[in-house]
Length: 386
Image 1 (cartoon, rainbow, N blue to C red):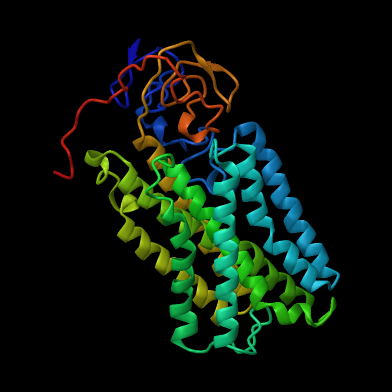
Image 2 (tube, rainbow, N blue to C red; image 1 turned 90 degrees about the horizontal axis):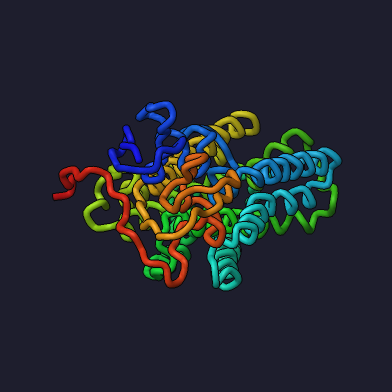
């Protein structure tokens, strides 16, 4: 046993602390700044797979990144050939489909994967479609992909995006009282899935007229490619990350132990998260409606990067906050690195949070009938919320 230089807990003398994930081999207390769900990456790195798909083992990340890249290339090629409606339909399903495959791949919700997954996806699709029809009724003749008559005042540019974000968030929050979904990653996954599917369904409904115009509606290829990438890829990422971050903040505040609920600062404050999401969605709406082509693409790309890093920080801090109980018994096999590790909060071999691994394969919970040991606790500090 040795004392961890970061949290002070007495833990097995292995490469990483099983209580906080900090490196024990280097003795660097700042090693815990690595992303808790993917320790080979920085906590503030710009990564799609490990951020929106945080329970994905390292061995599977390459496949999901390649799938995203292939999907993007396919959409661009189809659009370049002039089949804009087909490109739009394909692009609108890229991010939601990756999230659905991810949920099933990691068996994220244990004994209720079909019900929970179906509910989350259905909420996003139905709410997004209904919202799209409402926008079509309120603003007839507006084609969001061509950019005709997009500026219709404060209502369309400032109010409706906030209402849409609130609708996407409402579905995940319904699951907040259920105790079996008690991880910050549960809330983040619910929110990201609902937000991404909401955005995809909305853009398809708002572009119904485009499908009735034939496979070759005409227009500049470059402008079409940019607008399709905006509405089918960047907007789902922005809305998915924003809703996922807010949902994660609610889970951090209301599912964490009472003394710890105020220790994450603004990132874990639902009201601050709601304000940050509102600003993000407003900025996205302004950039989408007031700017054309390249400037709009640049603005939305920057906002997507900000949204990804925000969701990443919520997940990272949530995993560091969640100290789980250690179960007595033999070592478990880490699904991330494939090596054996003592039962704890983090893998002693690679430093990944065991809460960030597939629930059925992380070994993070006690096996039936195994006596539980007391949780590993860092040295006591004054309660900031007192």
